[in-house]
Amino acid sequence: MTDILKKYRTIKGFKTSEFEEEKSRFITSAKYVESEEEAISFIEEIKDKNKQATHNCSAYIINEIPEIKRYSDDGEPQGSAGLPMLSVLEKEEVRNICVVVTRYFGGKLLGKGGLVRAYTRGVTDTVSPNIVCKREYFEVELIHSYTVLGIIENYLAENKLKVIDKDFTDLVKIKLHIRSEDYPKIEKDLINLTSANIKIDVKDTLMLFEEK
Image 1 (cartoon, helix red, strand yellow):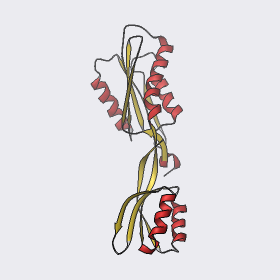
Image 2: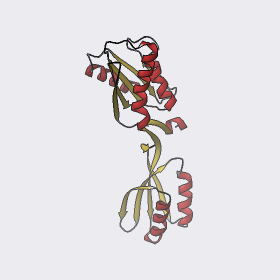
Image 3: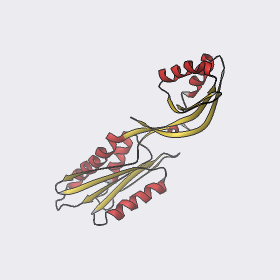
Image 4: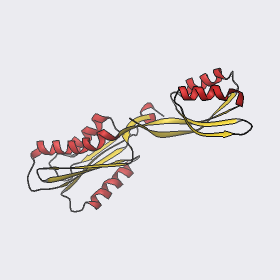
């Protein structure tokens, strides 16, 4: 997996915001998606929900190789809606995200410049405050004796490693999530600290959300 697939900026779940400009109502809907099919389905969902709207403009970026980028002005003047929306996503360097800005026309024309500002604001207000990082982690299991438990727990606490489960039987089993790029150093440290009296197994590879 290349670096851009192992770590990228995005949003978590669904986010929305709304504002009014010259009596036109702008509603932004943004969602985390993992494929172009999911993005298209989300756009259709928002359009179906807002059938009476004047426009449902959209943009999305899918984190694949090569990267997928699409936008639609949905009847607004060319270059006044979809492209500015996509530009915000590019500026924020977010991936696996789809945004739809729904406009209910208020009776006053905004002009191309006004439209660009409105659609840019819609995406910025919704996406920028909600950016998180999605990163590759390993789910790791540590198996060791009680004699090294204190050493290991101190190391995990000092390095702020997230423990997800502990099992105390004849041996201690600790499950934790470790960033994939940090794993080689942590593995080496634990082997050195315990004089190799530890078994370290990588159980799974996960993509997890982190707060910004």
